[in-house]
Image: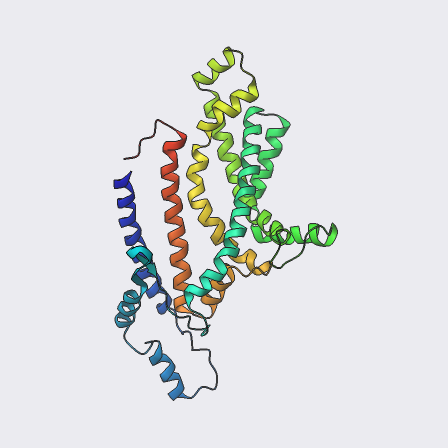
Length: 317
């Protein structure tokens, strides 16, 4: 396991560097810049602003300067060295550094993402298990139709329908805002619905495959009840495809909240990401991209490690 973690750490550093390089040059290849929209600014002031952020220097100078300031090595309590990422100051939000913006928005996005993931797992796995256990029944057909709709309908369309139904028609949930659990229930449902559909289909497929195995037939032959066989024997082998999906799904839930945070006025990372892209805030956009890349890499690593816990036949090399 130690060798695996060391290899993943090396590949994580390489992946972050590649993503950083591609993002850096793509953002600067687009015409304009963070201060090109400023009006009635004298040329001397504009030159001073560009000089402050090194925007008047060649691209390779800017690249190596920002890359050199990205990684910080410090010594913490008990003389333990550690590394942390310093994305620098925001170009457009002068009173905040990129690290401060991320620290303020990440708890909101994480809360929304965790609640959406819990909803997706609960609804998706329940629907998948019931559909597999009662194959070709009305439950199976109904749940798979709902799963297909959840996958096909975009989450911003679900958000619009949810606001009409739960806010205006039934008046049971608030329309927007942040601060209480009820304010993120509706956006979490809209965000988790497509992922619940995928999980339901994966669970059903895995469950149908496991229910045809010899050890399941043996359990039925010994007189075990259907519910006990499904929950205690079949489910453990059937959730491996779901676990594989959870790695990119977790990062997808966080990145998928970009539009929903704007619709429901949640002060998460999504709003800052959109503003950074529209205002050409290079450092803020770079920080958001690297954070999402790091989350995706870490979640995929946790998924690989969880295989050995779920299935003893899987060996970590």
